Length: 117
Image (cartoon, helix red, strand yellow):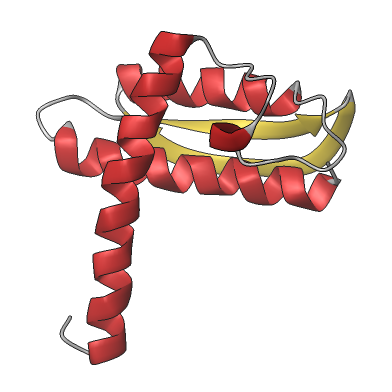
């Protein structure tokens, strides 16, 4: 996987987790933090700031660690990977987040296209 792909995938997973956390965990305290991007022991000199609840922060940390350790040079979509690196419970949790957030972000995109927002 290229560094650009790693950065893009890291930002994408954060965007999906953030959307889910903002909509589903409104009663939880969100704290500010940042993710310093490193890939294959190389500092990419990029930092992504975010606000998440504790549970979603743990999910992001786990997902980021899996992404860093992806052994494929051409990273497949995780759902089609023949060698999944996620534990089954974590995979189910992230699949739920991605499904929910994908719908929410898709609806927002349609509203912007129709200028309903």
